[in-house]
Image (cartoon, rainbow, N blue to C red; front, side):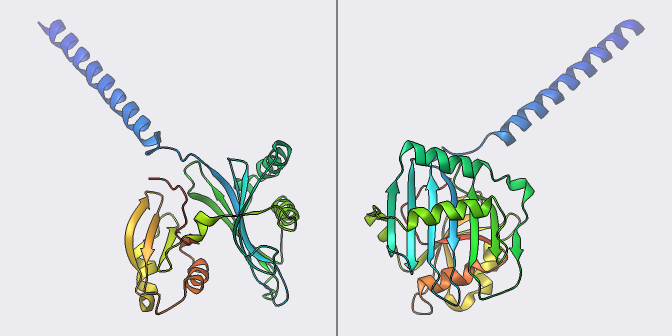
Length: 247
């Protein structure tokens, strides 16, 4: 009887151990499995070239997996507004090589010499769900290979052959899309900017991406976007264009 009881306890203990290991394995698999479908077109990176105290080109340009560049030209550029350009296979491969040369884990978040009259260049790098995984702000200090990306993009911006992106021009003037940093609460951003009557219209992603409405009589859309971009808890702000985001 004693041997049977001991054996019975050993079997029970082994069964419980296997059950716990199985539960841990299942839990890990669930945690690592991304939710939602991947977007049809992936954004690799966006470069936001800011203004200076002179005649600096101001624009945002994005490199995408469908072999297109998408640009929002603002001032001192040949094309003002939303445009796109289709790349050749060789052009796409060249930009991909420059993109892959950027090892994000070797970069900090800010590079500046505090000379405010120089143009600020902000780089946004996206994950496979088109959520920002790294934001790098530079002003006066432009480390390679980030500067190599900027140089390549400036070459394309100065060329002709861009096509007007009519879909991107269709935006709601009282909405913005915002992504907050991990661990940050979007409500804190809303409360800090209470005078513009921001409110959540929809949560677009578990990565901290929200569609916000605001009172356009209190501030213009571009002014609000520039204001939010400078806030510490914000990764990305843009108009509500027809883009695919993680659901």
